[in-house]
Length: 437
Image (cartoon, rainbow, N blue to C red; front, side, top):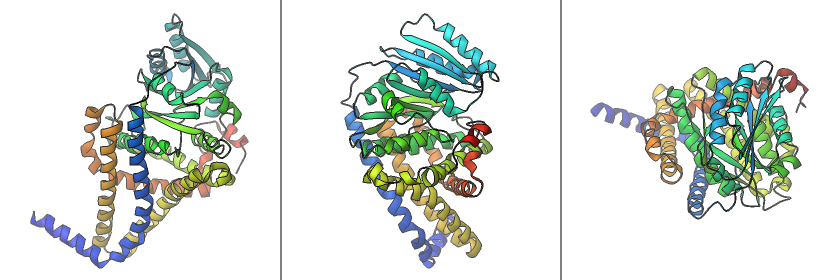
């Protein structure tokens, strides 16, 4: 105990001596993070009250587009959980196989799934093989061209769903002003490794909680490409999905550019429409994923859609939110924080570095703990299961800081090497033909 008190006294004394270091980053961080947390928490509380008074008044027909590439037998989970939805409306399931000639295993699994459920009159399953690989965007647009119904849901071929998912999406889309709705993704393989556990917490807080809260303010940042629902007329109006790699963020941003023209238009998020997905289980695969994700952010905001960052298109609310939390927090702040940490390590003693990092840890742990409590209390539909992650919260701030460094590297990689063009989401000849920005 005496040793702990000595360490604590040393760190606090060091912080007092070098308090100017804290003043270089703490006000900026608090000015960005605290308002965001307040918006999220108030939004989640508002959603919780509204959800208790929402019910399903109709069951419109829905078209599900399953994008498949190399999932093999894994797509049977997706097909089966869509067929088994407790939903009285008609469901059309379009299984689009990209590069079917090279992915015969996936194609055969899709055919088997179609035959297995052919007696269901309220579930129409159609396999659409694209023999030449064209990438994710062409796969989605191929499905859109075949979709019969006005509610279109895109899902990944390795994702499974709770059987009330379709009902939850239908409720969220019943508002005539809602043109799109994101579904919530949970980490199915969270017990596989340290990295999957960290991502599980990340999905709970950064994705489910934040998206739930910000959607209530009309400021949803992204509708996941792995699980998103759209009204087909609007989807057709904006030209469907576009090329390059982050097709989900690109599509969401293009929808937002109609906000000024249609001020009542809303993008919704349904935290009770649950999908389950596997996330990268190794550090190497996680890094590759985040280099693509984070590099795409810079490409889309500051290259492809820089002219679209206009309040005359987005409205002032969306414009300011994207500017602060899409550009400043996500693109610039990781670079600033990384450079600050490098500066610390190079020019200050170890005790000073530890003192500053300890201060950062305490602040982030407080923010994360509050967010997790809100998630458990108001959003989680599996409270007992999610409570098991409490002890991992103590480690999560280190993961969050590490991912900030990864984001900073991804930004540099995008600027120097145009990293978004090094994606596996489409073959190189498709990305090469896309317009350069």
